[in-house]
Amino acid sequence: MSKNLLILGGTTEATALCTHLAGTDLRATLSFAGRVERPRRQPLPQRIGGFGGAVGLADYIKNETITHVIDATHPFAAQMSNNAVTACAQTGTPLIALTRAPWEPMSGDNWIQVADMTSAATKLAMLPGQNIMLAVGRMHLGEFAGLDQHSYLLRLVDPPQTPPPFARFHAEISRGPFTHADDLTLMQRHNITVVVSKNAGGTGAYSKISAARELGAQVIMIDRPEIAPRPEVHSVPAVMDWLNAHPA
Ligand code: NAP
Image 1 (cartoon, rainbow, N blue to C red):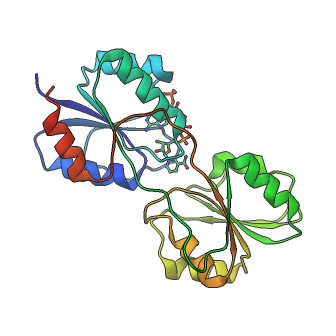
Image 2 (image 1 turned 30 degrees about the vertical axis):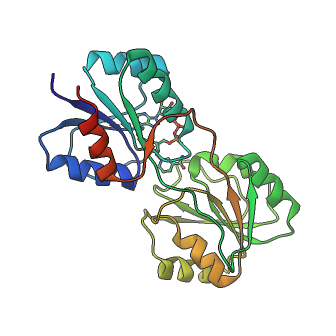
């Protein structure tokens, strides 16, 4: 049987893997949740939308005769990753996660590390009025609602369909990867004193962290959620080695 891969995407790592796979004779489908209005064009066939939980994903794997699953989702997409672990165990499908190391604080950083969004909101609630770069994604803005002593800079991929739940905010509509120089300029323009960020890892979203260091801004860094144990690699060549070691 020939290989037929399912790539769970939504990241620059998934895009890099797809670009590589497009130059091989392997069959593969890239899956998006459908969160952004215009996903980047990809060189592989795509499907968009949830599977319907772990059960739905297991059905998809069986119906589409998927032989291997590569989870290249964002480190905060814990639900999808946990569903992949469950569905692959149920169907006996080899699973690998393409992941990136978390960021670590370095000299000059002023980080407060918190366990989750709720803890980040609790920290913000304790601060007197500040200019906050709230870089948590539109799905999580509601968890910071009512903290109206602050002004917010929101960076969003698409214009918000409902007004963000803040008295004072500016929505910057742009899509990464971002550069240090761009983020420095943006944060200076909005006089940012605090950045709230997920510990995404990788390079594409790091510029706000390095810019915060240069500006002396505080960073409230949200730790990654727990994900069920699964094998992980950190590069496209390592995924290819894993595929070679796992016949269909
Ligand atoms: P999540 O909470 O783990 O996922 C919620 C549900 O969305 C999943 O249970 C699944 O629905 C569906 N889903 C998620 N990723 C999918 C995919 N690649 N293909 C098909 N369905 C998917 O995930 P999230 O944090 O909302 O992130 C959604 C997507 O955005 C992910 O693909 C992720 O890689 C990307 N992303 C997330 C972040 C972030 O900060 N969370 C940042 C950048 C990109 P069903 O249960 O119905 O299958």
